[in-house]
Image (tube, rainbow, N blue to C red; front, side, top):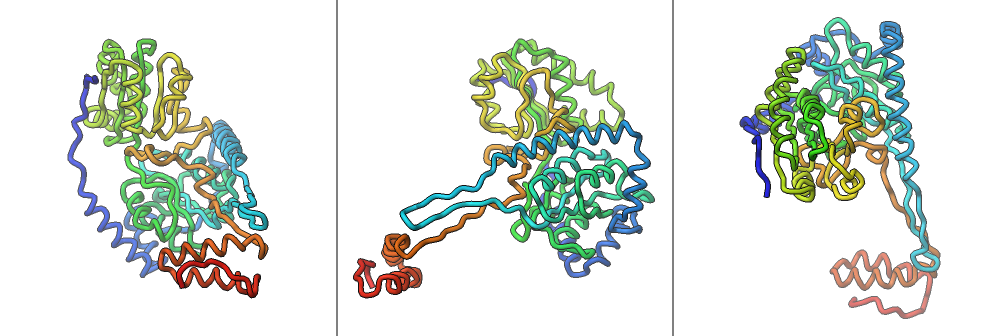
Length: 433
């Protein structure tokens, strides 16, 4: 049995069809009009009329403008994320098997040729998103990395983001945000190759542009609002749990957060603490967190830890933080989340910024069937086959019979001819003619 100490009072969702139609129209307009249309949209939406492709002088100026402590922090985060991505890559290996004597098959991993990395701008300067996307693509061995971010009027890509993009290995940076930035990378404008994959978080228009382009290009995932769930028992401290919920509600007014607990007193204490903590935030941050807590937050009381685990797996949160006893049990039991944070000594904020594992993660329950951004997303796992005539003998005969069973005579004859050429005069049972 579960009991809701607080239920979400979710507002009506915006009409996604309207967003989709607007984004589709923009993509079609950009594809038809090319660079001139992108420049016009950059001026209209971002008030940017400067260079689209960021030059060396702007990159050098961005580096010079930053305090050394900021650059050191960015380098620290980059180093952690790079080393984690390298460890991920080390888990990939080619393989080969002799299926039958004389017939070999295998797999190998090939990085994509070009990746387009979108780095959000807007209210927050998402330095961490630049590190997560560009660094991971570089470690994967992507041949060409293009990155874009919304320019600020009179400035361009903010210095911290531009410095980070350059440090992490972006070959080209574009002063572009929104649908026009996504389209420029997908369509290969401004002298660039077309992206094979588009990655990185963004607003609903960026997400919809990626969704509409999927198939024509690859994407990391269709992302919704950031979400986070905390599992806590009687060992947890209310203020710590409350801050972990507030920190994620800060992302935006539509960012869901959940507390799942076996301790009624803890749940009630957190419900009382959250508004008090939100009130200490800067005004804009507090406005987002207040709306998210009011409309999208839930506190769920469960009978025992197994019930908590079931609720968590059903929700399949993007971020899952366990502040409960017996962390090894939780790590082994939980099965649906984007990234798992174990113990009160860690926090989702660590993962969001600099700890190492990627913060581009599945939202809106997608963690039931997919994981987050990793080197694997930038690599194609492909297979190969090679045979001697003798090795293909049984494979060819079986292929012919199965093909005829299915009614695919052309497939059968492609197998027949191998047997005829390699074993002239020999009679095989090849199924109905």
